[in-house]
Image 1 (cartoon, rainbow, N blue to C red):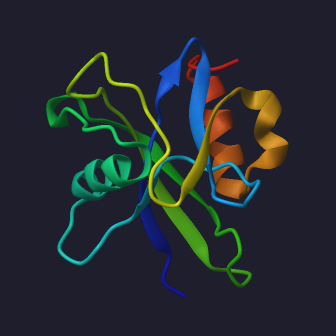
Image 2 (tube, rainbow, N blue to C red):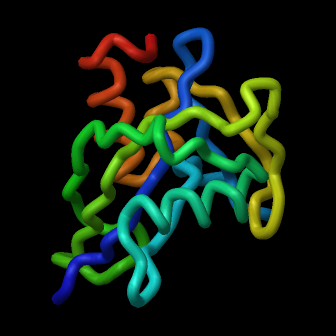
Length: 135
């Protein structure tokens, strides 16, 4: 099975990582999503961030932090997600993320919230903790 390739935003404030929940759901995940045909990882990140949390990212600030490869949540056993993680700054440094589209709520989380995450979120929290970004 081909992996699901996604780009996700790692936005940290006060040692907490921004995660979101879809409307009517309780599972935490990072803002971001699948690359569409002809898109780069950077393009997908910028588009999905705008669609999900209303932030326009400064492309010059994009920094790839790594890729999480793990079982894809809600997919058949053996189907992996390859989630490229990016840090970035909004074009407007006063802009605040806000839920939009399919997003129900924003959550600022620490490693203590890993039990609410699918496998890729758990691995992302481990990485962010190892990098000294979150508690």
